[in-house]
Amino acid sequence: MIRPSPWPELDRLARFVRASDSLADTLAAWTGRGLAVEVMNRVDGVCPDPLVADLLALYDGARVQDRVVLMRCGDVVVAAARSWVAADSPALTPAVRKELRSGADLGDLLRPLSHRRVAVQVAATRERATGDLTTPVLTVQARLDVGGTPVAWSDETIFEAVFANDGRTARRGPLRIAA
Image (cartoon, rainbow, N blue to C red; front, side, top):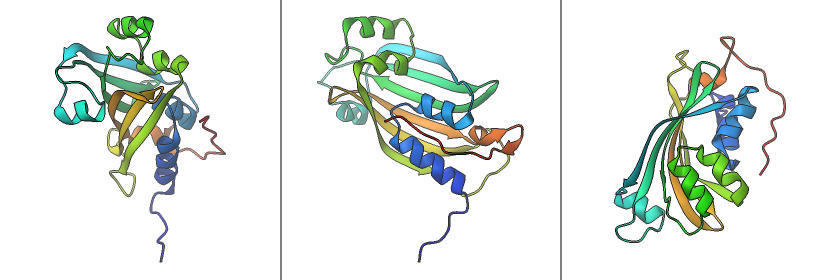
């Protein structure tokens, strides 16, 4: 027997996040407002964790760019992400590699390269809303590919604030995510 979900809106958001090529674009559509992506920390030349190196199919000794970003809807943080980017990947154009080092938004840089975001894991961390906008509700592990080549791995956290709309859960109509 299939039990009804205690939080159907979270299940719906998880499906959209799983199917999307851009977390920021998906959350902007979900909230119905613009979303600002703020790079909080960026470190070039980091020796990646062996698991990340394996997931990105990096050669021995390869270095990555470690990035931490916050996604805000107005003054409220709705998501955070930590990404490891293979900034020297041959799948990236020289212009993209240069812009990465200047701190440009990763999603904006990859968009014209026909990238694909592969949500490897999407997991709910709560069954019900807590009323605390800073409570994580979804964790996501995603890989970004350009031309079939993995170029970034991202650990993403979506907070309960994504459901806030003047303090109440928003009633939503159809949400269309471009694939």
